[in-house]
Image 1 (cartoon, helix red, strand yellow):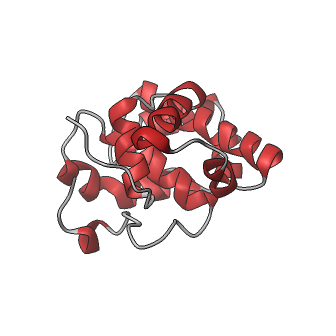
Image 2 (tube, one colour):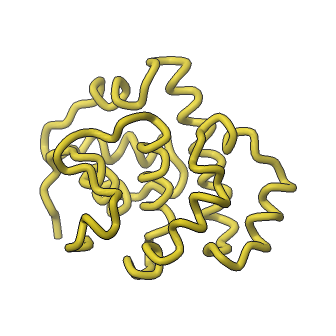
Image 3 (tube, helix red, strand yellow):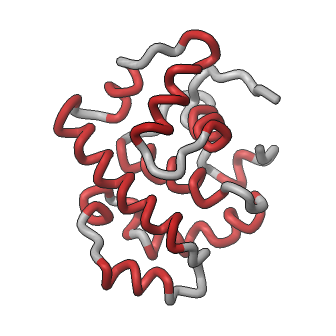
Length: 151
């Protein structure tokens, strides 16, 4: 994980993200981060914010095939179809959580965080696209959860 949190500006270690869009942005960053360097993602992240409409959940949840085509032709971001489609799917899941429980923070508060978040990692993997165990760990850490590093 990056050492210079001030430069990246996306780790919420002293408190939770301010809103669902910030949670969604962090999750998306973790999805795109998988198998890539921190620097590559950090350098391109402003372009991601623009391409994904500042990670406004409602807007991204309404993206269609034309938007996928636009993103796949945007050389300023990483053009990985599976990760782009996962971002759209995850936006829809965030909308459903908002309808069910009101906020993502409320959703997180309903989950069993014992055993170093074992259940939470499984739940995130079941509910969200491309959120495997490692990505889930980074995501949980980035949103200020008290998760411990595992080898």
